[in-house]
Image 1 (tube, one colour):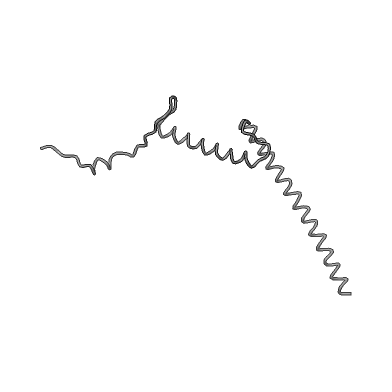
Image 2 (spheres, one colour):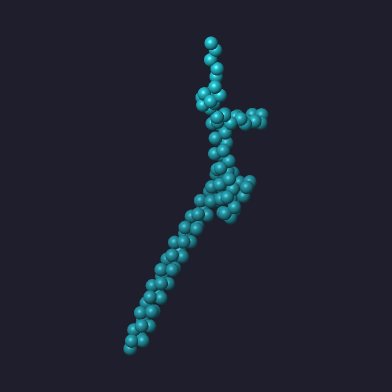
Length: 107
């Protein structure tokens, strides 16, 4: 007697395979596809950074672009520190003046 294969048993054992047509010189194995997807995500995020940071150009190399971005973020941090010190000095001045004004009103 011959055993008949059921379609249910065969499909459970088969793995789901993604078929991709690759151009000449491109790999189609899952590791290479995952790596390509990772690089595409990185490049997309770098393009977003280029749009946000003044002085970044699409023709720049990655090391130069990262230097520009690092310097820009540091300058923003310095501006925040300067403005926060200026704000705290202004609030101290305002607090002193308001207490003097209250003392004058009380007299």
